[in-house]
Image 1 (tube, rainbow, N blue to C red):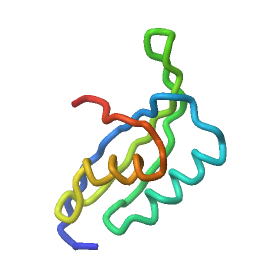
Image 2 (tube, helix red, strand yellow):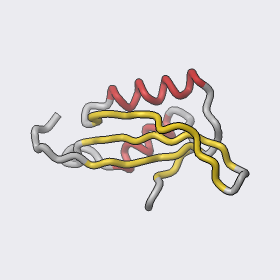
Image 3 (cartoon, helix red, strand yellow):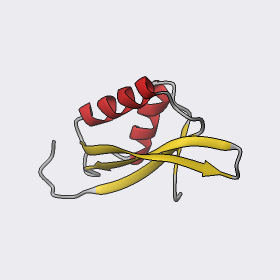
Length: 86
């Protein structure tokens, strides 16, 4: 990892509720990415009483990765997710 001392945060939410093994796989996969400093599950969210998913907060070094790369990694795991606040 680059020693730039820069940290950016992103929060993503899954569209559907994830199973326990899926949550563990996501956390392990994100944490193993070279430029990710931390990835933590933030619990479930409820939106308009129709969608029940989970959200994660990811801290990463923006000098060697961007939020879209993280989102694409999630999609590669089969997680339908979106970034919150964009």
